Length: 161
Image (cartoon, rainbow, N blue to C red; front, top):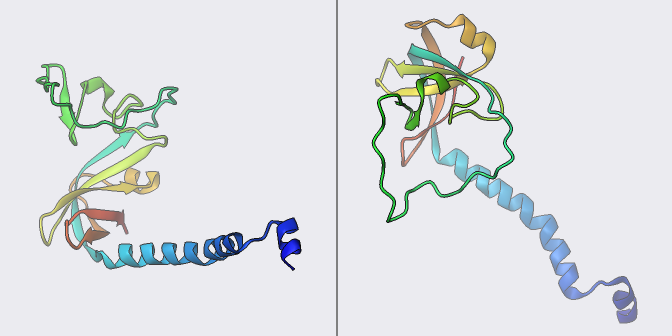
């Protein structure tokens, strides 16, 4: 029996590894889903449309983006120039806003609706599909469903109904 195992390449460690691969992965995924669902509160309510914005898809780039987002100890923040604007924490030229050169641009087009909840006054952005985005106007009332983090209050997975 042991010579058969040696020929096939089965050892106790291989058998244990195969068993763990089959049983541990689903448990890890299930645990992650339970934690993520338990860590959020589902909310919905009526909101007022404050603004709409369309952002084109970003142009494909060949360079790898850097992972460092905070300045080093020797770097100094430069002041904004007169020809720059700040949008959602990003500094850009006004003519880059909404184009593929927008720093918020992703690999796909985005239709964003900024809303203010009527019950608590909270303001956040909701991604929408193009057909809904085109139908909406400023000051329209919409029904919004969203999740908030129990501990941080961060809005997750918002959608317009």
